[in-house]
Length: 424
Image (cartoon, rainbow, N blue to C red):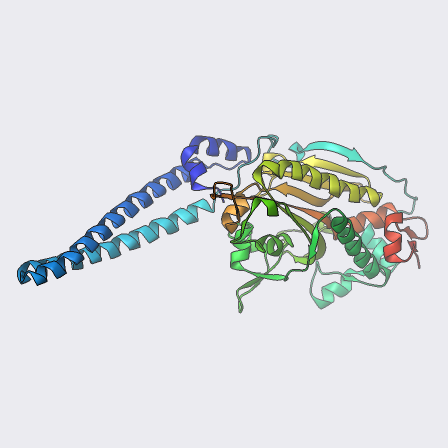
């Protein structure tokens, strides 16, 4: 959430920056400023009224001691009137604060000055590419056919048990999943990230803290009996670990990694681009999260991108890194780099990771701060990235490593899978 201070001091600049994301903010910014003026004026009136109420209430005792009952009764009536007015002002203040909060959460995060202009994914900028595109046999097939051929992923059984988008992994397919999760976690912990295992359901406060609510409630699975949400990513519970926390500067950075299943309704997704593992309602992902001093966050973002790139290289997959344009960025991000791997059988790029700096946007919602040398508090910067999401990684691994009669396992994974290839 943007801070009121930023909006009040730079209303035109805020509207101009949000236009880079394709968001017309002028009207909302003007409403926020007007509501904040109303809130301040109401607070001033309430403070003055309460002060007068206290002064008048103290006068009653003195007037009674003086035997001036008539003046004391008049003072009592005045206090009653002041109390009634205070109640009205408190109600008005509460309504102004509610309306202000409702407007504030509608504004996306400001994009960084580094964000390129553009409206759609076609306007994203390729930062760099790596890896070689494999030469596949003439019999090459997409991963959903390979999964059936080698009996490692069963999409029809998943449809029977739950519905479309909930596959069942079997045999070496299940072990490949487990191997990738362990491999990713080991790579992350070696890089200094501390592993945590968070809950897979969160409350509304947690969803609000990282920006999923009220922006994406339609994409989240909801358990109404308990008012819990199934997590769309480990980012939500892991980042909320430090909700309402004040760090000392020496405690930063905090670097965490977590594996969780992720649940997304993906409403409206259909067609050939969502076949097989390309888009699921339940999938596995390993996440990295950082809490940083503001002056260090962009250097940290660069290190995160380099770290994810190192993992993709070890998987021997052709990849590219994209800097997202304003129109393709998420609600909460200030700057995002996407990783895509090339699927030779499908002849398309598949997104497998987003690495983002949210600056203070999430921290403002979380009330996650650090204490400066002069004992004041400032908002930290939060960052996260997929390291990595499994479904499309698995799709690319199966497709790019297929031979006439087997699927080769990359060298870096073989000690985790305990097999070098998948065959009938």
